[in-house]
Image 1 (cartoon, rainbow, N blue to C red):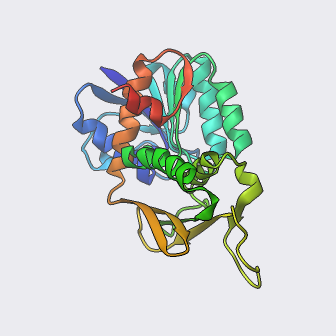
Image 2 (cartoon, rainbow, N blue to C red; image 1 turned 30 degrees about the horizontal axis):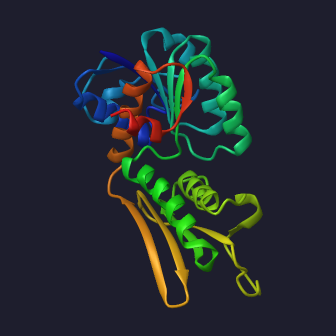
Image 3 (cartoon, helix red, strand yellow; image 1 turned 90 degrees about the vertical axis):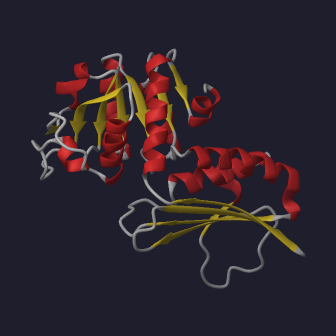
Length: 267
């Protein structure tokens, strides 16, 4: 039995992770953590997630419950994720981080913090999206700069960061396919008299509306034709199931800083 502590347990993703874990054999939720002052502190995490009482109260202190788990699954904020990573590493617990909005320097700090434990970090835990990462790099390399690249992502109105971590990763994959540094060629939205589009530019655009779970389109276009690679998430369960798959992986993996490509290859 793999024992899991969920950080961000009362959030949209945290609730689905708890509910999905309740359906999967070999997994047990043994801890549920939220920010200090959260209105649901003390309530049962299973009740909050809609899967019934699991006798795991929501707490604001990861350190107090860390010994109850084998793996910490974190979907919080960049600052909280880094703090939780330090606690997991100190207590030799495996870690899965699906938080978006981490800056490159945050990712570097995360990798340094988790040395000595197994950690999977990915801005998107969906199996389909992680296949898309690979495809985008291959297509960008094959088509070359004759094809313009535009990335459009759409999410619900409550999402706080933009562009999404997934869109940023897709842009990095496209840039890598062309052997370019994304920082040198990225354009985030356009407004006003921006002039003709220069060759090699990668455009990244964010849409926020309603209850859209997550949509990502990578458009490759040249004179005469257009290719689009599209992923649409119909439910947050696709991310939750991926996070649980990553948790199973880290529970048995050697210490290291992994991504979802590593998790998918392990099957």
